[in-house]
Image (cartoon, helix red, strand yellow):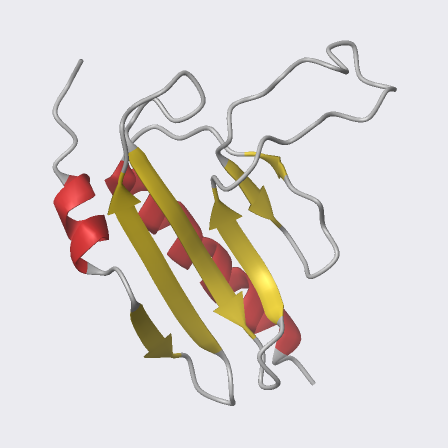
Length: 121
């Protein structure tokens, strides 16, 4: 297994909040846990973008497994916990966790995309 140098960066960002202007803000939570089959990388995390009234607009986390709808071939399978919520009412779609650095890159790229979308006139 390769060393994930981004884990230390992610852990150092635990409990940080970052202003994104116009009332939007990012909250990062991350801490070590014992690796399991559901969380093989040993990090619990929640990276969220919130709107001006505190509502979650976007989120990446591994707090629960994502279940595929019955229409998919692998419905009913227990999936890894890594997933993302693309909007406030999204129950989550799988996210392929490669390493902590890539998680941060993917999350902030999505934050930029969402903010660009919601701030357009």
